[in-house]
Length: 55
Image (cartoon, rainbow, N blue to C red):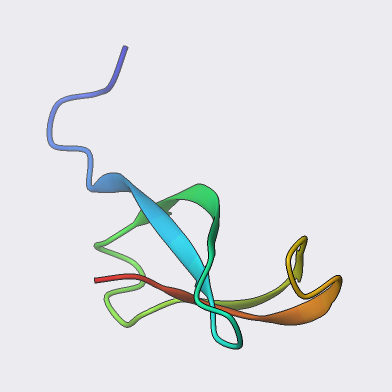
């Protein structure tokens, strides 16, 4: 069960090359207000690409 006032929210990561939405991950909006960018494996591109937080 979530604690009261928790700023953690699930976000979707989208491949910057092909645009496929591959990953969902939790993020604390209070600690990191800017958009997240991670290098993850894309199954469509079949290589590691940058995945950016979707709007």
